[in-house]
Length: 77
Image 1 (cartoon, rainbow, N blue to C red):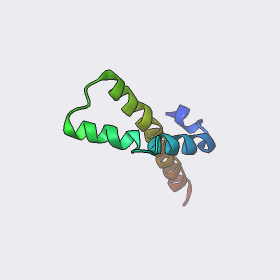
Image 2 (cartoon, rainbow, N blue to C red):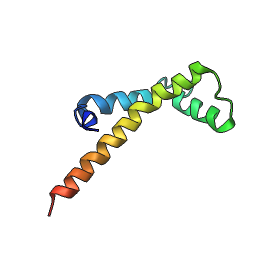
Image 3 (cartoon, helix red, strand yellow):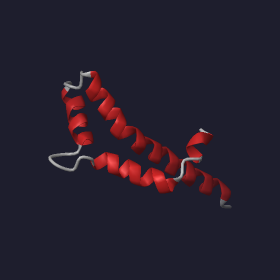
Image 4 (cartoon, one colour):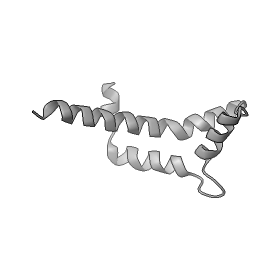
């Protein structure tokens, strides 16, 4: 998991946030794909790829932030 620690937050934050809301109009792809997933209509490979494309940077950001938090928590007395 050390490779995640090497990803600069300066790049990860804007990429994750942009892909979470892109395209803004008519609705973000992430919202659309999560709705399709909950309805059971997420079946095409391109839709599954699109969901992964939009959600993976958010997952990496969450993991990175938790790892920073845990490291700081361990290092403080």
